[in-house]
Length: 517
Image (cartoon, rainbow, N blue to C red; front, side, top):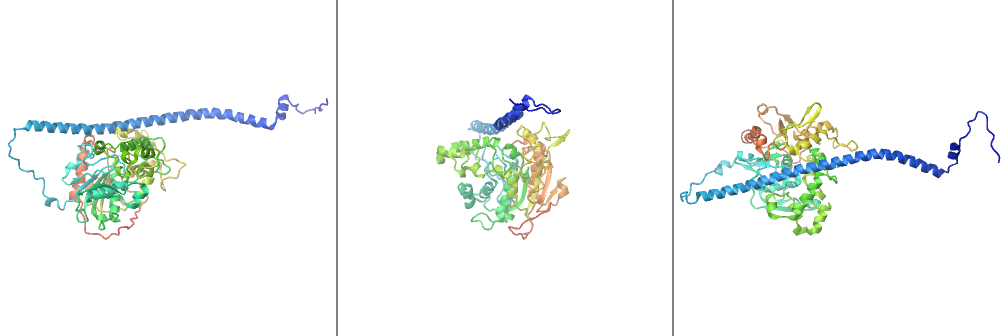
């Protein structure tokens, strides 16, 4: 066998080198894959641990949020039932106690007030927010914690608690004027529900017109309902009512008004990509399933006690059967499939879409109460009072103060900054509650003291910051203490003594109101 001659000074090849060079190409490729696989396994192990921690945290947060909301909902429901039972027992006890002890002569009728004295007094309409209810629901429980008793001319409509801002504005019109709720042919066709809804045989304020206007006070999403209703009045959007105008409303007052959306919607389960669809695993998905089941079961006495407002979607088992239930649960039909419910309207993107068609009218007075945002302690944004904030809002208040819009997505509007949206009251961000800002900022004025801003001027959003959380001025008046009376007494006094319709001003119904920031 012939050997190659070794060249002096040259490095002798080793057996390993000879073996390596003699290996076939496919073996080298396999070796490379195996080496990369070992490195991938080391990296993937760390990533897997991180992923499992994230999943565990997600489900723990979802479980905790679900329990808190469920417990609070049951507390409200049982409180209403207990109040009704107690009232019924008291009435029965009085009847037993008064039998044969009172003279048979009838007592003189109590004269509340003559209709003439109220002829020119505009009613004040209190509009509830999300998951809210009006007079007649949940027994004798009051959404506005009895604030409606502070004035003789107060109306508290019961609108859909989860229906869209659009549907609620339509319902509010017919509640006041009377007639069968008409959601509009085009809107009903696009979103897949019946065109007509509840029948109000007698409106609560049938004489409502420009000469008999109203004041509206809206809590949370109720503020946007009021604004959209006024725009519909200006656009003459109600068939058979051709004389409507924005002047049918004297003033709009918002308490924690949701003018510009909230980042809480993304924490609850809305997709930040579009602000319309839901995440597959979220609190809102659990809510969706519960609402569909509630409406499908269609238990008459239960829905009379509380109603989410989706009757015009016809989800009852009597109408759709089991297959209809499955289609709703699978997301093929219903309000959650079409997007015609309130959460898409409360995202930043949804609020911008809605605000793009809403005006601030020069003949209407606008006021807004901003519930105080969190403050920073040692650099950490925390709720205004660890002890004072409601447990329902505590977790979300902390999460909203740390939330960031995904960097890989296009921001919801030009000039968006995360730090502008950190301050919140547990449900809404401060930047959302002051006045309409996006896509065009409307005229506004910060109020330090009510007396300093008088006389009030129409067409300007006057906003004031108060120390409270999102639900301080509803349900339970004791939580707000004396602040509750100060807020509502101030609102009602302003409506009665300081805000009046001036002489008719010429304004085009579709006039764009462009305002500088």
